[in-house]
Length: 516
Image (tube, rainbow, N blue to C red):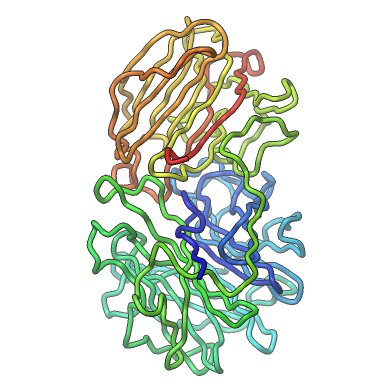
């Protein structure tokens, strides 16, 4: 029997939510401070996914100005009902609007609406549920007033899907599986065999993460926690297990009446460090005594499973190299926060990505001249070709490994053809190595084998040569830097210049596994 391999979406793709429309499946994940927000993936077999674009791809939809690292968009839910797709989500922090909102579309690959903000919806991690009668219900999570730190509750109100507003009375559904439960969140409701199932995450999003459920005869409750809770967790497997922090699940039933869950988990390496962040995994689900059984037979998330009983539908593969030969950026690229101006071009010099030099820096909570995409492999190669003539000592262009503004590594070309390798930890820069390269095209590279990471440089016709000594990649992990995101690899320019007077041209970018 054919098998698939987890994760189905490697790299920083946390908080997955999935829905089915006929024989098509659509999945969204959190993006925090990155723009555009909420990537939407499409599949016809639950195994092969293609990126259609983003739900929030217009600045008017997503005000991320001033959002801190790991603020921004938390935990979206996607649902489909009577030809309309709904995405609900929470925007945390920033200087603009924030809170819970809903957007809609009739084509998930097309244009999504402007957000309908719901100030009456408390808390975070919202979800929608359409019952068999067509009524819609909104669930959310909020901290218990006056409760201990991390003590939360799940609440429900009816949702008018036509007017996009909450109506009716509010109901508190559940406070968790244990009396001292913390961070009960990510609630999703389902109706199965005449019973209502409330599926939640619990225990926080790290090592103690878990999946818990409660059931009720009526949608408004009362809900009773399963005596088998947690139904899925890896906390008992230890920090040396290759898959950890399992939780934040969403269920989907195929047209063949098979059930599956998408969920987040991490893959620690080099100790309990997960530079790739929280990734999207797929596990089979069966039903016993009215409740779900995750990963039947083992009760844990496995690397490999039998493929779903659906026609295999792989998409055309995209290679590891972006030559920037299209009219617009590939949707895999994102910006740090919402750009107020266009500082990039693929047409000024065809076959190149031109980034304008601007004073904004990745060390600040701003939108620098930077494009990024998630690190997808533990053992990886990431490189670029860049042409850049710095006009002064403050101008730099090159390649970065970005965890956040205070934890990243920069490999940059500057004035006098100097190349510097700078590591920033805890908000402090450390110069690790420097060299000079000849005129013309410069190639810059990071390669990592496990957590041992090294920088390499070369001129256009030269062989790669190392710059400095290998450094410990664990400084880029969540355990060192905090937050909720994985490492993003970026192309970056900065400098104190008159805007528009200087730029860098990137001829290509490659990100691949060292096994390829």
